[in-house]
Image (cartoon, rainbow, N blue to C red; front, top):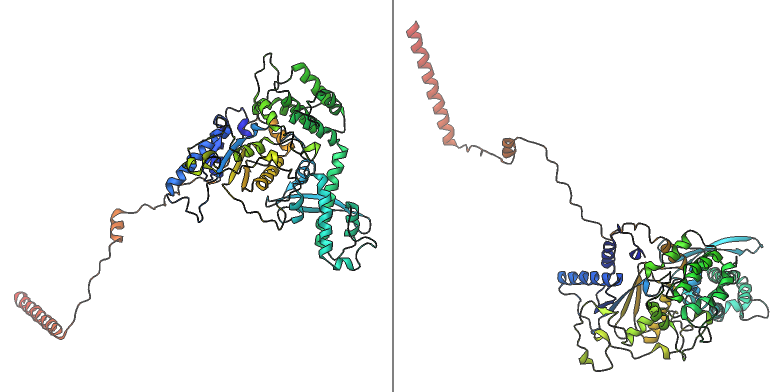
Length: 540
């Protein structure tokens, strides 16, 4: 989110450059809006890809059979500011939004502590880990909370059917299957030999019940319905909402509605109004909500992500009008739940990509494709020569009940892959949309982001967009030149001679040389005697 801040001392281009190195993905083309942070990142990433390919001329390696190149779609959070504010009523999203969870040590899951009744009636606390190793969690995480409970009971009954030993004498008399969460809870207490399974189902049972309890305590039914009316621009009956303020003011005054939820309602109302609010109207609504500090700052910082907060006399037509219209569902499209009517803009963009209807002025390739679309024939090729599926999400059934990630379901994808990267954070509703579209279009779709957003984290980051941006740490440590070796000062002559080794060959001694040496010694001795005798004669 820091790329939307207005701090002049922040090196935002440097942050994007580091992100480009992290996101470097080899694809057919990079789609983005050129005048946005997404456009800047796309161009930086394209340069990273080109540089890599120059250093690695054999990349990418040939594949057998050949596969179409993937498309990397880069967008930023300003494309849909409403999605992080809405209450998402799927199991995974509710856990992260409503409950006090923390990331696991390996960052691959979340930890949650809950209280439970022991066999002696006392209360105890237990910590549970929700990650990819929990098959029960994976099978229900994208389900609406209303379906989640039924699915948990269904999975429990499947277990009872597969384990005949549990049928022998451990069940409650008169009950062969669980029909509700209460039945499931009672039957779990009578299966002491299945401790691991009991702990897993007990954890999810407690989590689902806590989510529903929070839902009722904080009046999320009324809050969620109003949120959907504003985000979609229509009521559950498809009519234009006309009592938004009348419905919102009582919730702003209600002490049971949290301050964060009140701020989310006001921000969604400002987005819905498109041109912003008059200062007097804004002040009165803030007085009803009694918001202070960071929550007010979050509302006032909405213009930094493209949302007009203050109304002007001749408001220009806002781009949010187009986005809101695109979020409306088709009249023929079935809606499973009134509190889940909003369709994230990211999902609509992905759908448009597969149907070849993306606006090229808004989503242009950073580099021309080297695939000739005319070779594939009309109607079979999308932008950049990518084959289109021809499937429209508007004509498909809702995918809430489809469990694409359930164990035992192996889907073989076809066609080019789509990689979506969201600058500023992705939401759980957008992640769920990826699973749904991957199932509907039978495609491999991957979504990544600078971070995973929850509503509270989004509000917190909005409130601090005026703050200095912390320096970004590079994923590759900078190269540091090693210090030169430390040399002791020495004499040049000594240094030179120390590198020379002078050796004298041993003398070769033979018999003749030994005799000559002896003769020479005798001759020298005779001369010495004569010399002494001459001196004696001379000096007497």
